[in-house]
Image 1 (cartoon, rainbow, N blue to C red):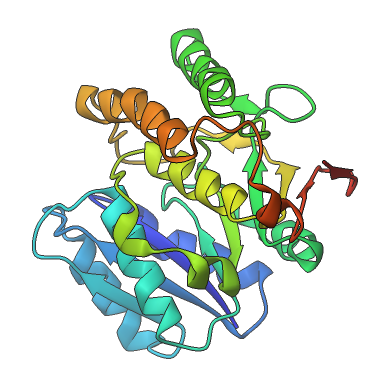
Image 2: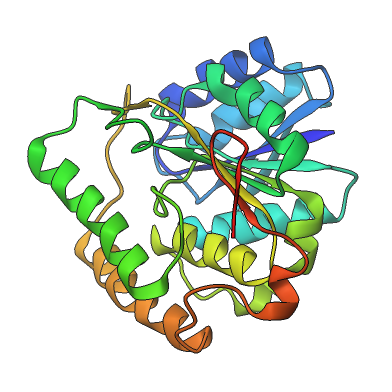
Length: 258
């Protein structure tokens, strides 16, 4: 079974359309878990109304306060591991991640442990962003690669698919990030554990409704977390030998990178 984890905060206008779009492209054994951070706009109530119509496939975790993106995904991972899900996705509620790409993730996951949707593979694939935001994002990707050696083109992207055994190998209690650096930390951790990583190109669309949750605190966390990860990995430029014997990174064409 597949589980799509979708964190929400003030996404009342997006949750019903995104669920319909997901279910239109994936098999019947696909479920959605919304993790809502006590949204003041009534997102939680909208999700509960959706569950009355489809309690088998739509699930919810309602937090009592705003815990942040990373804590939402940790809660979702823990929930998934308590149940029989074989593929676990990360996905935004605002349609910046196109649900039509989900079958491509499943195809790529046939020969990879972690699949990343890349906005920068085969050119820049982002619509409706100002140049300043594009430069910040592209610079962040370069920064992560430079400091950690992580060999992916889009380490900060949040459209991902994990095989279950990757999440089982994580010590979720050690995942420190709570903002967008959560994406870097989890991908770096999977890489250092020797799991195979494959990037596939996606087109990233600016949100349909709502507002961005980026702020200066999230940016500062990301700035320093990269150095913490490098320190944790002893500034290695590749996984340790025992991990490299287990797996290698796989690029978008399916070729192995040693």
